Image 1: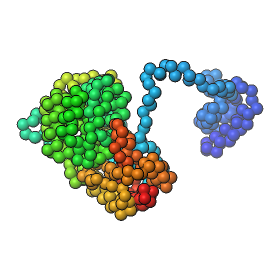
Image 2: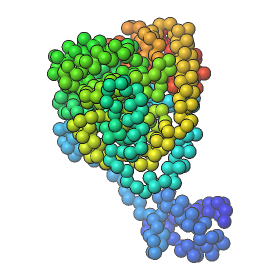
Image 3: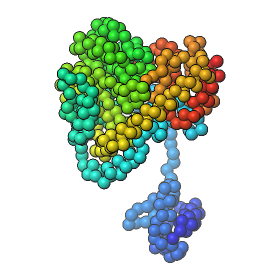
Image 4: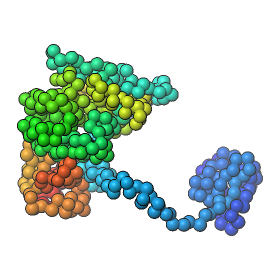
Length: 466
């Protein structure tokens, strides 16, 4: 029977319900079938529509009745004030990077790449294969799928210098995304009330995770080439900290890529203070004119705790990451992971492994490198031509964003607001500072949709900044 028949039944019953008493019983399905010459399926579809609109209640084996309408009353949540008082008043503020944007604006704020930069065909095929596998009905191991653990370990082992013990699959703990990994690491290796050194500026998600874990953040100034190792050493000496969070490869937001010499100096400082370097390699797959060079490959003493995520390079729907750690630190991370998430979906692990081991994965990565380079160069050239007052300290050699500074006289919030009104969404740099911002900065993403609009965005920004 057609949808038109179902619609007619719905319309007639709506009229009947309008004048029926509350709790009144509707005609039976059999009588409605006879009245309208419709199939039982069509009648049931009509009744489901009425139920979805809140007009009737269906009681299996009894019948369908006009729904009782309760008199709405104001909600009273006042009791929660005292219940939550001990936790403090701070509610995490989500940054601009997580804001949604309509298709009619120019989006330079998102931290996730456009679909053009994702291996969509590989991901769709991988989900299809995963749906037919045992993963849909089985519980995976807490540390992760063995084959995926081996892949993460072998990727890092491939760049491990001779003489350094290569990571093993057993060193890997698969995580439900890098954000969960950060929370676990800050809880287990730093601890509530303890000090964590952190690059400033740095990834906003790490700042939020540290605050939620109750650790005390001490910023260490960093920039387009990374932190000063002497300043880092002083921070360790003055604070007694035992952990430093950093992004040595294509950092967010600065795009910094540490030199080999700086990496060695930082590792020496960390070792000298018997501390951990928490290395976040979130942009590993987004090299443009350079490749990611993990510091974890230089260490076999358990000082470097390495985070490697696939959510941005494979798909935001595949929130799979890994932590590679050794010694008691590994055991603590595994134990916390079991408590927090028990395990990562075997379906998502299977999809991730399928994509990164597919013969086309390397070709996709080469294509992404070319696309990112074209996008980056277009945005850089557009800013230089149309927004000369917007300063770019260095063109990043990888990553997905530019870190630019406005004149000190600029009203940052006003610039962001006026750009939004003009159809250009940008992210204020304040979100990336764990303490006070040291200037008027913007993070502009060149991995978003419609790169052909970059010149228009630069014109708008240039006009507003002046």
